[in-house]
Length: 388
Image 1: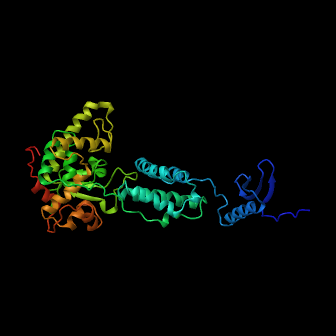
Image 2: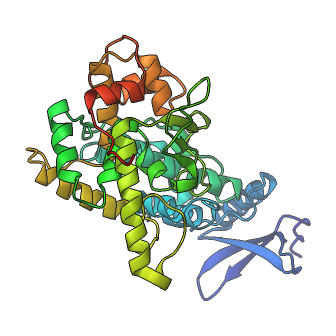
Image 3: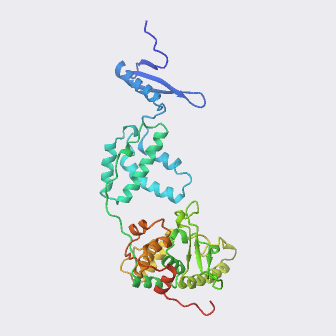
């Protein structure tokens, strides 16, 4: 008589149809009380028994629900679907685009069989055609996907964390407008709806994401010139178009004095917006946005980029692949050329220290000592209209 297997050892029987030994084990129960059974097969009792013992070890290690067929693509899709809660749709879309590289290169690989060597070889291949920063972001997407899968018992460990990101192609360096080019851009923008946007971005250094969220409630075009300690016209950079509505960092929340040219541009812009509001009538959406569409709705980043590139082309610049964020880079370089210290520039940009200002925005940095709005009035002189 065959000896009965001990409780917890699972079952082992011969399948006549498949001509294989089948090992099975109950690894747990669903919330509804249904048994969760894992099976393994082998040509011999020993082979099937070894597979069975592996199942039991996984159960004891807390991996009872590990799916042997769970792929890298499934792990990535699970992270994209459930691991980005609270993020903006723009962030989700960017990550989904990056993850296309993962799915194309590693997606069909079973997650349990993925090795650090597989990931290393794949990263090296990416580095031959993508920039270092892009490879880094793709790596982070994969690492987070496998971390999530590991936390949900799909795999024992995250081999991606053992790998390093190789150096890829150099990315497109950010550019900075020269003074002559900056004046040409301002002149070309003067008859467009984006003029005040360009002026404020170039003369205050505000981020494009901050300007698109700016409301008139945060703009003071008069200041308090009659008090003992006069307060100049200013703009409160306290919000952005990020999902939370907050600025990029706590230090980015700042109030900036407006140079005279910025005051003039915003007053003109407000008058033009009043005309558009009357023209739109009931179709106007009153969101109090400083920069908005002809019906009052928020500006889309892509529309701003397209309009700005038309301005650059009209300005006669030899290169046309400029982006609005490079007005902020130009703000840093122009102030540096005029002698403003790096510490003051970092404060105006909302940087927590000078390292980012030097590393990312540095095009021409020299140390000396004046403040932003005063310096910009000297760089871009403007006269107030008589009624102002």
